[in-house]
Length: 380
Image (cartoon, rainbow, N blue to C red; front, side):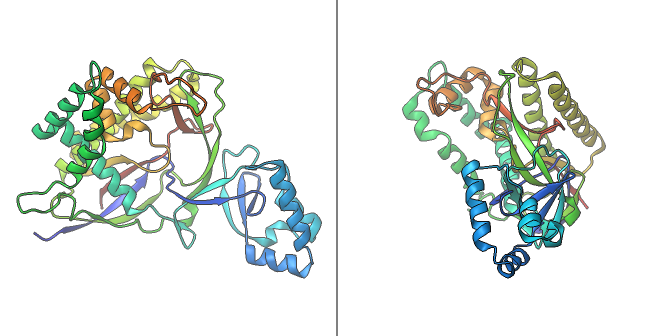
């Protein structure tokens, strides 16, 4: 059977960041003014350092900055350019990106995928999220999957069977599903092909500060992270190819059931286990999640060919299939799972204690009280 080809539209519902490992430093790579991040053109900068005989001066500046702070600095690159090179720093910039919720502007910036300066979403990130939703559907809705999930839970409660569980979970169960073959001997995902998105508009890039909130400790000071993101309400396209997983109403419903249930699980945890979270943050998150579930209900009623996924930075543990399937079916089994793998164990924790709930922290966009990573994919 030939693979059908569909050109799908993708919209970012909240900012999305798929990290590449590239990091920009405020010491050497950028400066911030009036909620804009300005990236230095390194070739122009190097040429000016050479012409002004300031390479040694800059080396001392970098050394002093790193000694003062490993991840941030009190020294400003734009001031160095003005005072030591006698030049406006804006004459040496090659890029300007909005940074609406900046505070100090002195943190490292984690970059997302780009192609010639335009952000993209890798097809592998979308494909992985789709497989996750299909795996969840298999566990919860098919006879074979239900039997597998029941077997896992039986061996987790009242006391987990460590020998059995080490063999069966999580790698073997997931691997067996991902490599399952049909009656013709073909692996079930062998023909699923998803391209990288077309480049988003360069203007869709945004720099955002994110923070980790602790559900039970109001004074928790997690290390903030600054990320380059594709801003919300940005659009692109991608190519989807498959003969088995045709993007039809049934497929879209499978995707949306998973999205819907991850949201309900998150709201249940926020409702019952979030004494450490401020009222404003809870209100912001719940307002967003209510809008999402209402939109999924609307799409189901109207038959709209569209679905939601969560991808990239900010995904929580419950966006990973088998964990949420276990949690939904039996919370005690999930606690045994946490105990077995010592999930959430702090580096300095001598005796492990189950974290209730787990995960105990969440990543949100500072001052906006929104999660990262939600996209909507639809038929063009």
